[in-house]
Image: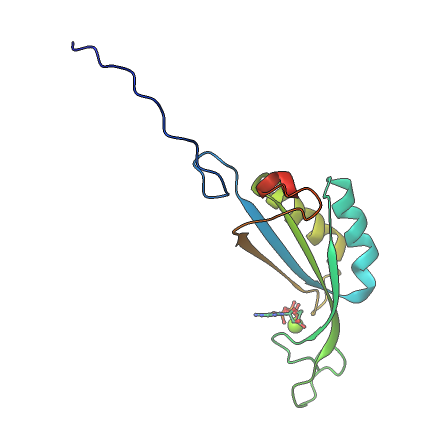
Length: 135
Ligand SMILES: Nc1ncnc2c1ncn2[C@@H]1O[C@H](COP(=O)(O)OP(=O)(O)OP(=O)(O)O)[C@@H](O)[C@H]1O
Ligand SMILES: [Mg+2]
């Protein structure tokens, strides 16, 4: 066997796309407003570092109304909802989904939705840290 001269490795790329780096995800949960405190507590219990909350309005399959007036025909209307956003390492995604579901579920229509997406980059403004170090 021919002995190969050990080659110097290229500089390790930085940024979230670097091989071997865990990915950063965003969870957006649209929930019933009165469930916000429970959801917040459930997320804190699993060690989430930050949360953004936005008042929202929306409708789902029942177009807003069946939640109020069952069986009647109404035009589409928006109902108040709260949007909770958390940015986390991918290792926490399943735990966070479970925590939100457990806290936000009433079993009635309008309980909400959870959306998961990829975050390309995250930067902590004060320190300049990026990626998982920033969250
Ligand atoms: N496909 C969607 N895209 C964006 N937002 C959505 C979507 N579906 C639901 N939402 C948001 O989530 C809120 C709650 O949705 P909701 O729980 O009523 O969904 P659903 O599909 O009608 O389920 P359910 O039958 O349990 O009511 C909506 O008011 C809206 O703000
Ligand atoms: Mg609905």
